Image (cartoon, rainbow, N blue to C red; front, side, top):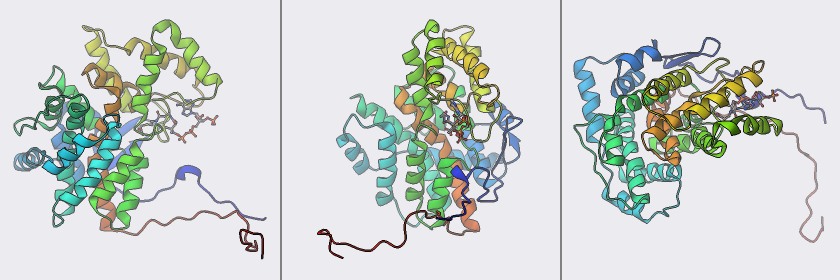
Length: 372
Ligand code: CMC
């Protein structure tokens, strides 16, 4: 069969949209949201302010910041029926399964006449509540209801643990780091759903399902699995060499775009290093050794730590269990998902690529008894 193959495997290098939301320089290791370097944003901004920037394209003035902060604070509570249903979910359910399902359920309970932007804020406000409520339900703990007076990130930690811990501003900054990253797999998947003019709950359910995979957001949980399995510094070399010999992927390393150190991984590592000066942080030394070995082995392939390598160590420091790491990624990335869906739909065209067929074409039908 003579077929001319013209397939971009994994759509590498294929542009599917024109966007002014973020820019990634994979050679220099730079990430820019709406013209602002993330280093600048984590230094000077908050998750609320950065969300406004990503959604609206410019930094908010005082009134606008007040508006977004208030909206995000007022929409946190979940419908009672949803909380009742969550109480009946199997306690073994993974938090990403719960998040995916509850976002989908919410679509049946929320008013349908809101603008896409109102819907985006509403879901962004509710996702931390879904995650924290599930943590409390799973662990047979009483629910802690959201507090309007707290910032988005502080309120999440408060709903999880009943207080706002030391270094909570780092958690806020970690959300900023995860809020947006161009046409990654989950953003692409949700943009495809948006391009069919589907609703926001379907768009975000698609995104969550895609983020869950271990090659994407699910990698942060897998990194902690790996660090736990390694257990101590002496085991690192054997463990990593064994993975490499078996040609297995090392979780938290590699990236389609970054061919140098992921700037987000660099920032997370430096924060942990700063805390580590005074306090021992679990798995940090093991992680540093893993990094050293991987960088050495894969110099030519340009494989560096990505955002998922160090994020889990920080979340673990806050007492967050590893199966909640990817939901936290979703809690931030919803801003990017919704911004891209809204931007794409301004100049919408349904996504409909093609597959090149390489199967037979002239088979003759036979019934189950073999008769033609
Ligand atoms: N460990 C070992 N080898 C690797 C790794 C890794 N983590 N990543 C890439 N490689 C090798 C790969 O085997 C291939 O080698 P060869 O050319 O000899 O076949 C080469 O590097 C290119 O890799 P690829 O898989 O074709 O690259 P990709 O752009 O298709 O995939 C990736 C990117 C992120 C899926 C991949 O690097 C990976 O699987 N990493 C581990 C999972 C992970 O950490 N994911 C998080 C990604 S970043 C944040 C996010 O999206 O959540």
